[in-house]
Image (cartoon, rainbow, N blue to C red; front, top):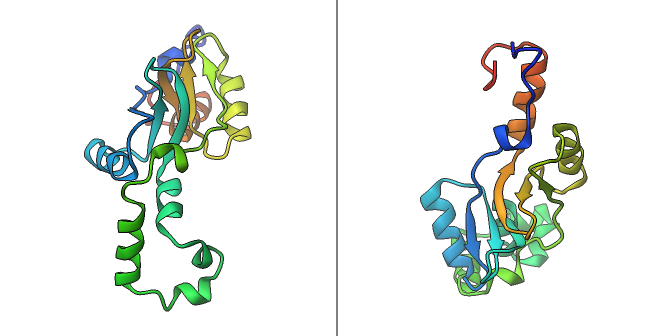
Length: 161
């Protein structure tokens, strides 16, 4: 169990942010996510400031035709060839066309409780940690928040026990 005197800060528990520029394509994002074994990327502009987030769900959503997204019955009849065709159609679209632009962020100085609440308010429990200029320093995910809860409950195996 963590020491009673050990203050847990955003800086201590965040993971490094994986970033990608805002001038890349669907294929570029997917390639980098696969290479880095990541399920999300923070999108930054030429100055390195956060402009959006791409996650695996946003990629899949873009590769599935709109008419199938809400129609599970019709999707049963979709073929592998149809999936391939859709993937090829979206390969070169800009990341700005499918990234999530309205994301909640936190700073180093924010409390862990604030980070958890911001994560709940967002759509995916990934909370970018930014410096004062809006540049990503790291990211908190549901994994870090879950580990912190476990640490405070004295559960063995938590990352800060």
